[in-house]
Structures are given as structure tokens and as C-alpha cells.
Image 1 (tube, helix red, strand yellow):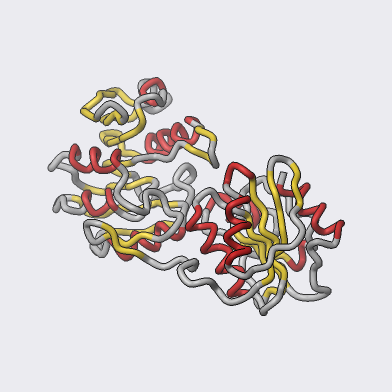
Image 2: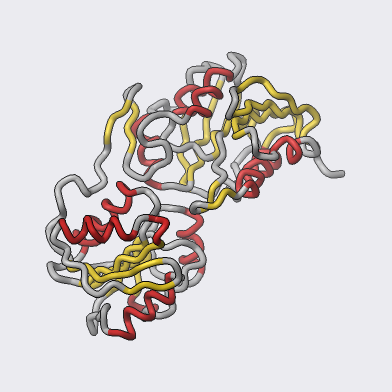
Length: 327
């Protein structure tokens, strides 16, 4: 567990906090225990809205002044991890301590090697709970580590760490091609990512508004650059809890189904329920998902019509219409 490695680093003197000044914690996940740190001095920086909401509810500051130490919680994506280390180093004075912490399955060993080669001088490595932590010394940002926008096929802009940053997800491509010409009214893209589906939706002239709901702030920033249609409205929010100002005529989505490395069909199911409760009585859900996920069993009691409309060996396209309301 992250908390155990953090406590060991502090107790052993491997991670020495300055007597004053803020301590910035980058990209912790909801459930991470930060109680080993002096809470009044901690600033949590995260672009994932559910994690943001979690730590804000616990009373942590979510922005701050000039930090003098940092904790980087290693993400899965290598490019995102490099960007976080560069961000931490850029926030701190030269030589300030950065505790880099991560699971072995998330590549902590290779990241420590890269940090050492880049001149961050990792100190003692603490191993516990299937992970490692070590203190780096803040210094100049290595070339190519910072998160910089890149343009991919189709003229879309993406950033390191966002889902499907190199090309549109195959499922989204299939769903975009299957959307009907008659799509109209108020529409939502739940889990909008960097805007591939949104741009396809807004080709339809009868769409009067499109709510792009996305929990990853970096992805939503990309969507703002990729989708310039004035009908688009951007919401940094947890799609499973989002409540629109008015019900939607249609929802389009390619929902996530992973939390960390573990597949969690309940996450996608929460997206389905969010669409169900926010659609008009005559509304329609257009969905793409992996075939192995049990979403049809979830949709059947929620909608009067549930039908497969295409896909391939991996993905299923589904149309679910006319939400059933409890009496």
C-alpha cells in the first residue's frame, strides 16, 4: 500500500520534509491514505474528478502556493508518469525532495531507471506491498518529459495519459459510423474523452446541444481544442453522478470499464444507469462496449427496447430506447 511506503520513507529519514512550506501530492487515487503527511501543508493535484472530489471532501487543499516537497503517485501510462515527474520538478526549487511511489506492475522499476539516467539521483529504494518508493532530487526538466499536446490523424489534439492518445479507439470508430442521421435535440456524450465521438455527433444539424461529460481534465482540455462547435458544452464531472440541467433526447457513449488495472463492469453499469435516469421518456442510448461485458442484462430492465445494431468480434453496438420508470 502507498501509505505503508510513505510512512517508511518518512520514518527512515529517506524522505525528509522541510520544516515549513507546502507538500504537493500529484495524482493520488481515492482511497490512498495521506495521513502520514501534515494535512495542513498538503496540496493535492489531480485531474481525475472522482479523485478530486474524494480528497476535497476530506478537507485537503486542491491548489496552493510554492511547494517545497512533492509526492508523485505513479500512474500506469509511462508518458503520463514522465510528465508528472517533470511537473513536480518544475513546481519545486532545485534539490527539493520528490518521493516517487508506485506498484511494480505499474512500472516503478523502469521509471526509477529513467529518473536515474535523467539526473534525478534517486536515493534509497523502499520496497513494500508489491511496490517501491524512492526520493528524487528536483532539477531541470528532461527534454520530452513534459506533457505537450500532439496532433494525431484527423487533426485531433491529445495529451500523454489520456485514453487512446495515439488514435481513436476502435469501439468509438464503430459507434460513430453507426449513429443515425436522425440524431436530434439535446444529446450527451458521457465519458467524452478528447472529443472523437462528439465531433461525429455534431455533424448532425438537428442536434441542438451536446453535453461533453468527462472526468479526466486533460482529456476534456483536448476536447475543447478538438470540438469548436458552439453547440458543445463541456463538463469536468464524474459521468456516473452528473445531473443535466434538462433531460437528454439521446446519450452516446463508449464507457470505461477499468479502475486501475482491474476490469470493473460495475463502472460501465454506473454509466448505463446515469444515461437511463437522465434521458427523456422517448430518449435513446447509443452504446459501444466489449462483447464480454454483461451490459445487455443491465439494460433490459431499464429500457423497453434493447437491440444489437452491429459491431465486430470484440465490440458490440447497442441501441436502447424508451427508459422504463419505476412506478
